[in-house]
Amino acid sequence: MSLLLLVIAGTYCVIWLRGPHRTSRAATWAATVFDPAAYGLVPHAVLDPRRPGPPAPPDRSAAVRSICEAAWTGDWRPAAAYVEAAGEDWDERWSRLELLADIAEQDDAWLTAWRAADPASCAAATLEARCMVDRAWAIRGSGYAHQVPADRMTKFRELLPAAIEAAQRAALLAPEDPGPWVVMVLAARGAQYTPDRFGPLWDGLVARAPHHYEGHWQAMQYWCAKWYGSNRRMMAFARRAMDKAPAGSPLAGIYVHALSELETRSGLRALPRTRAARRRLKAVAQALATVPADDPRLPALRHLLADHLAKAGLHAAALEQFRLVGRWCGGAPWADRADPVAAFDLARGIAVRLSRTKPLPPEARHLKDTVLHHHG
Image 1 (cartoon, rainbow, N blue to C red):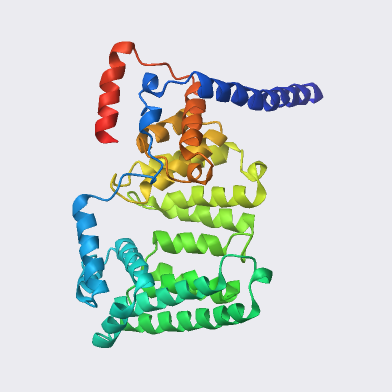
Image 2: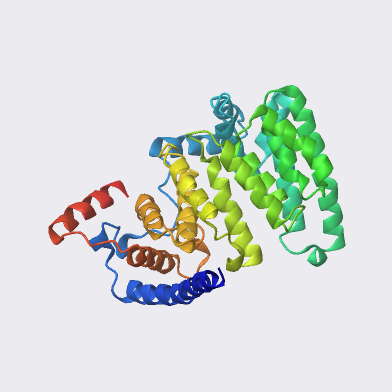
């Protein structure tokens, strides 16, 4: 038995030593030899770091511009209609409220008018509470608590409980709407809610929308180590979210968000390396394959997934994600680098090399490149 253990240990030692060396050699190849077009990938020259995925369709962009222009002239009715058009698609409804919050950040007179004209509107009341959270964080800033001046911290501590109270009043206007509960979950961290106080807020949200994407993202943040949980509790939460995600939902992507949070806080060595962890990453890829291609959350998730697949040694699966994101490279983790295009291109090249992907025949490259340009 001892001889067998020595053999196993020796094998793992060789793999451990060979891994960084192989990656280093692959990186050199990717930086000096890699020709993306030879592997059916978008050429380096057309990579676009401005966004993680394609822009919104022209008709949607035009509609948003129209809403903005109306709001800034004081007309709240297009904004109200925009939210109501989402119906009970709670994820889409929240996405539209987030857009309106961005508009209100610059000028909220139209929101004040909406609240006065239609005090029974849950959407308007939820948006008002959401904007209160934004104002609280703007006053506090992003520094560590000890870096925030006392007067600003006091104001922050006052505004967040008030925002939660405003969200609770909004919830009474439409008991089936999870939007106010998302605001409560969002505000709970800054309001220093302990887990026993956070629990009822979370229960209220998932009772109304069990698979709400933004709600799960906010709760994952609550359970991370820098707030009121730990690495273990955050990862357990992410696994549960992934396991209950229905087909067509991007909810499984919460798992790769949790991995990125884990890496940021605890370093690369903290990432799970087990077979079960690799199976989970493959399962995330399968889940994202069911999400509609025009879902705006999908490209950013594919970027994160490609990065974590590569770190797990699943280079062929990572390469498939790189193919799917096409020419867009403005998502994390590349967007956080000094040169996002170079970082993205290097990661693609390493995935090609370590997956042992063969180049396309020369006669097939031009056709493949044309298709990629058309759909990128």
